[in-house]
Each structure stands twice: as structure tokens, then as C-alpha cells.
Length: 102
Image (cartoon, rainbow, N blue to C red; front, side, top):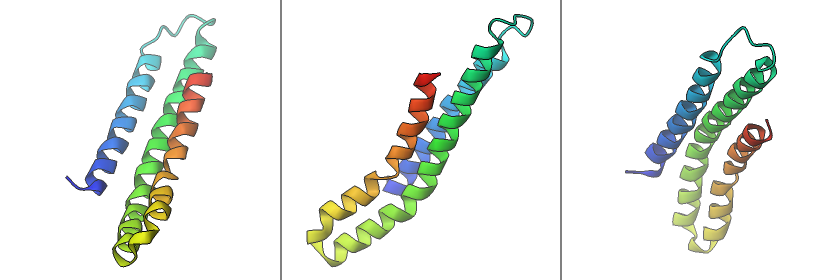
């Protein structure tokens, strides 16, 4: 399994996790006004995490391909390629931050 398929799988997993969070919010009782704020917060956190996962998956594919090409031409650039490949993961960390703050 190559790196691109792995990243697509991780993006799909993040999207599935966010959809599960959204489904748990939707299934909550609608008549209770005290939980309305928390339900909206869970919905927002699920959307933030899902979009962060999709954005990371879309950006990491071309970056990984360019990093592999760079390393193939000059093997001393391994650390630079690794850093550039890991940079999009910070986007998912922002999604997790929104998830756990709410």
C-alpha cells in the first residue's frame, strides 16, 4: 500500500469520525434548551475535525510525492522532505484542538 492510499484512508477515517460526532449531535433531544449550546459545540467540533482531516489528506499527497522525488535526486535532503511531509499534520492538530476545547 503506497503513501497516497494511506493518506486517503486517514482522511476517510477522520471524515467518518466527524460524521459520527455529527450524528450523535443530531440524535440528541431537541426539546432541551440547556443542551442546545453543547450540541451546537459538538457539531462545530465535528465539522472542524472532518474538514481538517480532508484538507490534510488533499495536501499531503502532492507534498509526499514531491518529497520522494527530492530525496531520489539528492539523498541528503531526507530531513527536509520529512519536515515538509509532516507539516500538513498540524492542520489536523488544529481540528483536534477545536474538538477538545469545546
